[in-house]
Length: 129
Picture 1 (cartoon, rainbow, N blue to C red):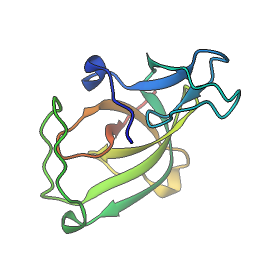
Picture 2 (picture 1 turned 45 degrees about the horizontal axis):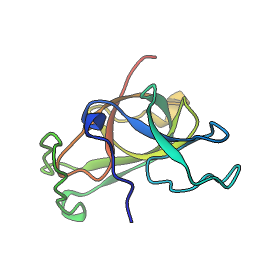
Picture 3 (picture 1 turned 135 degrees about the vertical axis):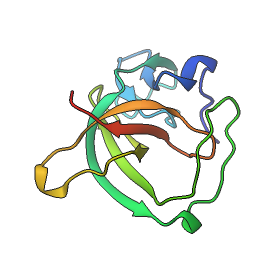
Picture 4 (picture 1 turned 90 degrees about the horizontal axis):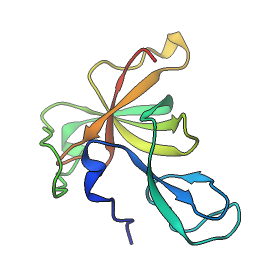
C-alpha cells in the first residue's frame, strides 16, 4: 500500500510527521518508529538535502510510470537515482535531474524540483544551498 500524497504535493515536497512525537518520516511511512503512533500527518518540508548515494540507470531499465497530476518526464537518456537525506531528517529515494554529482567534491547538495510523470521518485537537482 502506498501513502497517498495530498493534492498540493505536485510542487511541494510533502513528508510525514508523527502527531504524537513530531518525528519526520519519508512519504511512504505509515507508522512512527519512534513512539509507535500511527497518526501521521502530511507536512511540507524544506525541499533541500544532501545526496547519500546515487547511480545511473540506462533508459531501458526505467519502465514508464504514470502518476496523475504530475509533470511530463522523458526516459530518452539515462536516469540518475539517488538516496537524499533531507535537511528535515528523513531519507528519500529521488531522481536527480541535470548535472551529475562530482564524486571527488564531497557532499552534493540538492534542491527539490517537483514530481514528474513517468518518474517514481521526486525530482531534485544539484544546487548551492
